[in-house]
Length: 114
Length: 114
DNA sequence: TGCATATATAAGCATATGCTTATATACTAA
DNA sequence: TTAGTATATAAGCATATGCTTATATATGCA
Image (cartoon, rainbow over all chains, first blue to last red; front, top):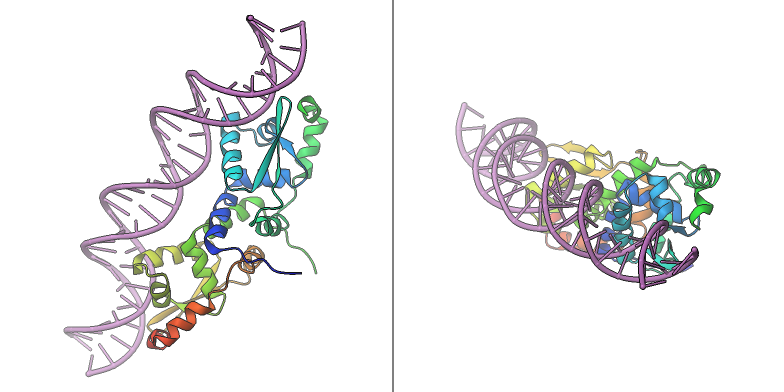
């Protein structure tokens, strides 16, 4: 398997974005599959604009990509981005967020908007 | 091989520290072996207090450890720290800093103080 | 068309960050 | 003991960051 070396400056910029508890949780969530904004709002218990601003940073950096589906916009990991290997490695070393998504589903909040 | 999961909050704090070009370079350097402060100053072309402050953050977080040898203080990776696996994975994905250390040695600046 | 829902953007503000300069501390050697 | 070298700390400042509230935009549906 060939190794892609990520430029130090790009890596630093990406790591800076990962270095926030809320954004790291967002990435932990999309790791499980695409999520829409209202789900992040619910799981993180943050205001919608705050979530939106975090998502914008992640999207501007190419870490996540968005896809509109009618009324909703879904975010997912951008697996084809240069820094994806770093993201992947980092996410493998933190607790997964499956439980939070399950709780959301149990509360009927996942179906509600997706 | 057993997997150690790093708490999300700890991971975020560590990643925030890695998310700085200069600190990431410092870690790239100590990855090759212990280095003293003056070497960081030389390689990064930054002021001594600026380097010192970066080192303090890394040390306070447990990412690096220090060892005084006479007049000099050497820094190295703290391989026994909880977040070491993350550091290790990240460092494997960025360009190594061997060249810079070699240049330092060629300039006689490595021997000078170590 | 008009209203409700989902999301984005803008402006403002408190706090965090990363440097600078000045100074303190610790060690070495004359 | 005194001077020199290596490093740390403190204070100050400009800029970055992450929220808030208010508002704009886009879509779906009656």
